[in-house]
Image (tube, rainbow, N blue to C red; front, side):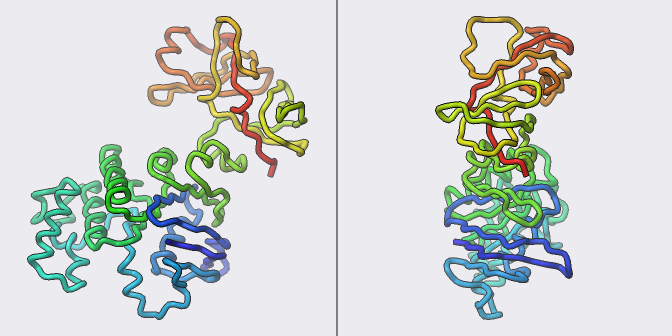
Amino acid sequence: MIKLEHVSKSFGDRLIIDSIDAEIPQGKIFTIIGPSGQGKTTLLRLINLLDTPSDGEIFFNGISLKKYPKNNTDIRRKMGMVFQTPVAFNETVATNIGMGLTYRGISKSEIQGLVAEKLDEIGLSGYENRKARTLSGGEMQRVSLARVMITKPDLLLLDEPTANLDPVSTTKIEELIRYYNRTCGTTIIMSSHDLYQGQRLADIIAVMMNGKFVQLGETISVFSEPCSADVAHFIGIRNILQGRASQVENGLVQVDLGGIIIYGLGSYSEDEVMVAIRPEEITLHVEETGKISARNIVSGFISDIQPYGIISHVIVNCSGIFLTTQVTWQSIRDLNLKPGIEVKLSFKAPSVHLMPVR
C-alpha cells in the first residue's frame, strides 16, 4: 500500500529523515519503534501529506504523492491520523465523531446512526451529548479513533497513541487497533516507544535511529535477531558483550569474552564480535541437579538482584563478566537467592546471538 523510496526530510540544515526505503503491505500493522527524537512523527506526517519530503518519493497504492496534483483531498480522505495528544473540538462527543462525515456531505440522520454504532464500538454509548473536552485522556483518544474510523479510511496512522495513557486505557486502545485491523481490514502504520506494544500488535517492525530504519522485518526476527548492539540494547537485551570469535566446527563459534569462553551458532569471519543473550534464555542453578544439557555452563557469584514486576533480574559476576538472568520472586524465595551466593548459569548455543562490532 505504501512504498517509500529514498525519503528524506530536513528542517534547515538539520536532517531528520535520512533516505528511508520501505514497502508496507496492505492489511498489515507496521510499527516504527525507536528512542524519542529519531524522526518517527515526521515520517508519519510525510505519509499523511501534512508535510512534504525534501527528497525521495512516497507512493500510495502505486500513485506517486510527489507527482500528484496539489488538490489531494481524494487521497487524504483514504487516510486518517490519530496523534499522541488527543485532539477534540469544543463540541459534543457526537459532533466530534461525526465531523468527517459532515464535511463529506452525509445527511444528519445517517450521521446520527453511524455515530451511535461507533460509540458502541469504542465503549462510550450514552456519551454522545457530553462535551468531548470533559472526557478523560483515554476516553478522548477513543473518540479520536472513532472520528477517524467512521470515515472508513484505507490507512490509519497512529503517532504513539497510548504514550500518555494509563494501562487500562492503553489496553482498550490496543483492542480497538486490533479490531480495526483484523475485522475492518484497515492497514495501520503506528509509531511507539513501547517495546512490548510493538511485540503485541505489529506484523512488521522497523527500528528507527538517527532518521534511518536500521532494521526492518517481521516482529519475531527483529526481537530475536537484532542487527547491532544499539538495536539489542534498545529492545531490552541486558547481556551485550564484546569478544573475539573463532570458528570451531559444524557452525559452532567460540567467543572469548576476556574471562570466560562461550559458544554460539553461525558462520562468522570477524575476529571481534558482539554477542547478545536474553536474560530469559539463561537458567540459574544453585546446586547440581544432574547433567546440564546446555552447551554453555559458567560459574559465578550473585552480584545484585533487581525486581521488575513479578520477576527479578539476577546479576551474576562470572570471572569479571557480568551476566543477567531472569528469575521469578517465588524462585528467589525458594532458593534463598541473595548477593554473594555461588551459582551456575547455563544457556544453549542458539541463545548466543552474534553481531558485528560497529
